[in-house]
Length: 592
Image (cartoon, rainbow, N blue to C red; front, side, top):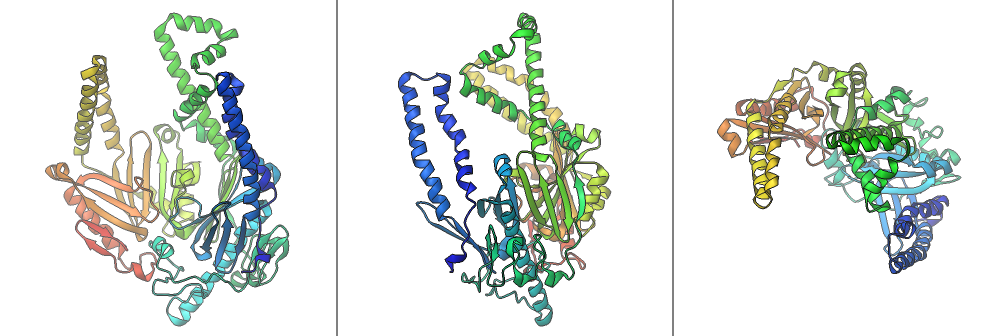
């Protein structure tokens, strides 16, 4: 391998990594600044801070000097490590998403982090932190260009020979075509492929002055001349002719929309985080609260203390208000300038105020459409659209946000634009079917038994805990809300499931993308003639799959059989050869 073409991170990496250590240093020295430690304890913290600086700063320098990466026709190669040397080879045809992230300080300095995701990965398989923004865009452009060339060559060879040929990058019995790949993209991408040659015919390397390659030098535009690409977008002009497909904007959030995202989302998590931070500032939160109530609020504070009931109500209202306001600020920072556009078979996203994110979602990787709402959002006609893809984005709870807040008509238009089977129209036409009403009885019995067991066990030692039984009336209320939001439906090539109590979640799954349809029941369900159906796709996170609970057993069996029949029906979406003969039995359908 020609190390002369190896690329390094941007020199600003040294500054940015050093700046990133400041919060940890402040945490170590916080007792020193607040005076909460004895004299001996203060000196311990000071010594720890000095040791931290002595070891961390040289580590940053060595890490920077030893980090190298290459882009070849077959792989993204990353060498890193200080004490342990890591060599990571990521096949280009396995790469699903390439995200560009800019936090506040790197954004001000013109630097960016490149995150590379492959099929089924829960975290980034490769990370370049940090390179210049132009260099980050070049890396993404060249990898897209190589992927486009490989897909075009595979399609041409397949048409001529009637079998997968690839571009010389795959071999062996496990090799599979990627053109028209369906629900088993995760399996085809995750394993079974032949050996990859690590020594390529030349390196396409991304530098501050351009990408040098055995296929040609494209200069600072960052494009491989062998791909005859045009401009910084990394276009494969040899395969798309005159130029790129015009990008179509599907949704652009205004400042008002970004604020509305937080208005309709409330979480006590932010309150917990605030009070956890206060614990480091002062051991007694009441000291901070008293400080906040000084001055013009002192009279109000005195009145509240004289009426305990008013104090409790005021405290609860204040907590709700605090959680609401912090939620608005967090959502505004995250979704400010949210913009998605469709270009060919790629969905491009960019969003963020302090941290700017750019990413691409290949349409063929979309496995599931999730529509979310809550009573307040639904009352005013707002919805949220998320996409489940092959490869889980843990920063977004396993899903990619396609539209943080949209009207119903906008939601339908976006889903139709990014799907082959008019997913938005199908969702709108769904005739939802309720599950069995017996599910409410089962829910109430389970939670009543659990409540009595917990309260009884604690009450045995502390009699005041028996007052916990007073919350029992909430159980039938929750059971009623839960039943109202439990439903399923079939519309054309789509299966739908609905669940939720306060927040309602609609899963819309293309039947052609299903991996598993499984019918199961337990002893209690069998006594009531009930069963549940689990429908799963590639890339679904554990505990987040679409599930229809407590259907009538006969209905559940018919549902499984119907889904299986539609999966194998003529005219279904294109699937790879390994997906043409799914295995099936009455307990479950394994569609692979």
